[in-house]
Length: 306
Image (cartoon, rainbow, N blue to C red; front, side):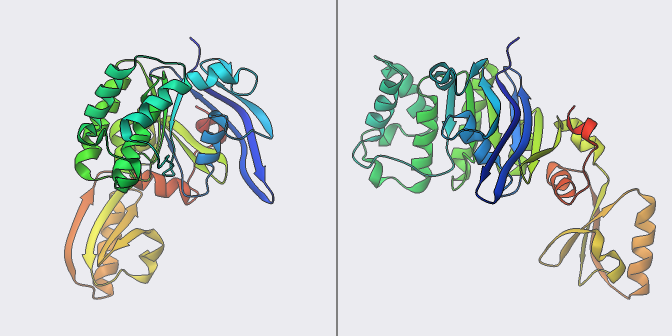
């Protein structure tokens, strides 16, 4: 079967910055795929290359077998992108914006699908409102609608829920899940890692323009699981500071390699006279896996290419 998205040795440099350094990626049709990484990892650059907004210096990229440079018209018809930035035309209403987007793809009499999009994105009441009058969250909903208006088989969501309220986030994901069940391929980038953990079947992680992990969500969780201790205390023994994954207002999250290390942690707390207000073991989650990988605890190249 033809891959939904294929990138082979894609590299791109901006002056002295190597944004992408030879990315290989293959996403099957019908996948819900996560593309994660810190700011500056190269996610948006890769998306821009797939969307035909910029060209790679080397390598190739295809959407459902259509080269994004050599067969760009078909590649763009197969792809819908929700950009990270809020970009809109201030002279049109919401409905006019979606109708105009339909026209770019040669679609006429698309009103029924536009109405469905407005309904699922909770924009029906704002259909005739000018884009300038919308809040930031509502503008982002319209961007999602624009990406979906031509019913693309491949949809890329670049931080789609940034600045969006919780209620809309839930309804949006319900709609996107339905599209995925109907056969659409979804590629998601997000800093809300709980979203990626809940939604994505496979996940790639980028760091400094390279893929440093690529596997099923469950395989990543299993490979980097470890144990996390949630400790509420005034401080952590100095010898354990390097093991602190993160700190939140007096709560320390400490990574252990095995349960036997818990005894050593407790002994260090006693020796330093540190009172424990609360201590609990936590299951590994994608955020912990992400932090470990970004800190350099990466799989071998052969594992990363799995």
